[in-house]
Image (cartoon, rainbow, N blue to C red; front, side, top):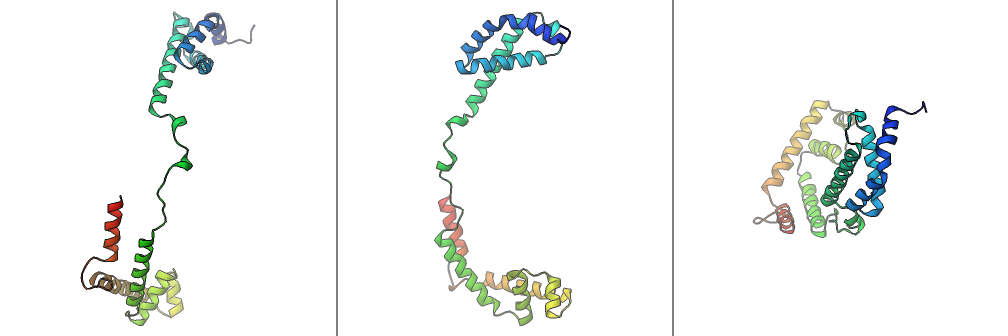
Length: 192
């Protein structure tokens, strides 16, 4: 048989005659249904070994591979058993949608922001509305308003600075006490 490789001859002559012993060894180490798979994997590793002809005890070599593969399977099974994990759909995941408190707090802060927007100088208010609410680019705003891009950027910076200062200085509808944002953060920290 000239089509056989050297490793094939070694496997047929030295390893295959012990297949019954390999099957018994594998059946002792893993579940009976997995024993044949373990033996086949051991065969594949034995064939992949370099210099098979130099192995003094091929039967012992394959038995060692079977034992090591079985230990590897048991170790992996002890770390994570995917079969025992609950169905992902049955797991209780937190809903990412905001609750009613967050919605109301957002509405209050939005209405407050809209009130503060009315206090801005007219051009700064228009630039902030176009940029932040409509998403227009500064160059498009400049064309629309007949201003230079740098003037648009200055109005935007001025308007945002005024809003930021106003939002920090005056709490919503209260002269004292925590803001809605702080109440929301406190509530979220208590839940978590």
